[in-house]
Amino acid sequence: MKTKKVPLFDKQVIRQFGSRSATLFAILSAVLIFVDIPVNLRLIAGGVVLLVLVAIYFLTWHRDNTLNDISISIGATTVQIKSGDLFKQDGLKAIAFDGDKDIRYYRLMKAWKQSDKTDFNFYDAHDLNTARDSSQEEPIKRQLRERMANSKVFVLLIGESTKNLTKFVKWEIEVAIKKELPIICVNLNGKKSKDTLCPKSLDDKLSIFIPFGSKIMQYALENWPTSDASYRKDGKTGAYHYKQSVYDELGI
Image (cartoon, rainbow, N blue to C red):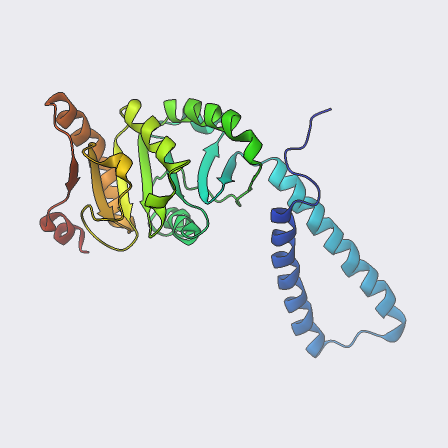
């Protein structure tokens, strides 16, 4: 029998259920303003609602157990892992960020694909599934190392506390550097170049710094890997940033 990766009463499942049931109750409340249910049918109606809620919960749990897109949180660090055929796609990207403080930026990045039709392979319309078992750190690192071996780009979202997450973010950066992945650093404070919030692990390492935004992200994903390869060939290192003319051309 196949083991379920998400427990039946997982906190993430409960949160998702709470959100979806709240929406259902809001709709029902609006309907009941205009529709009066006969007294003899109210018990039946209540039973139907209860069955619907149970169905929603089990469907939520089942869906979380069949996802191919999972975000694993260890301490304050969140790393996204994808499985299955997604790792055979060309241009797969690995992304790391502060899961406690910067999760909203990751969710915005997921929405970019829907609005701009940009092909960011790490943005998929899957709900996040969180695991916080720190005892699994080494197996997770091993799995992530394999995943990053299939990635073409490493993206790091840099927020106010990212540089202080030395336990896991530092390890991810070091793996990306060792594998010579093109590194795109995204400043969540809007800065267009490297600043004091950058983790020390990236000091003197080849990377490009951009502000948070869909247009410049797309530009970097399309152009930085080629520039990275050229700079490596010439033995260049350090932090790079785009000229203002690039932003002017993009209209930002």
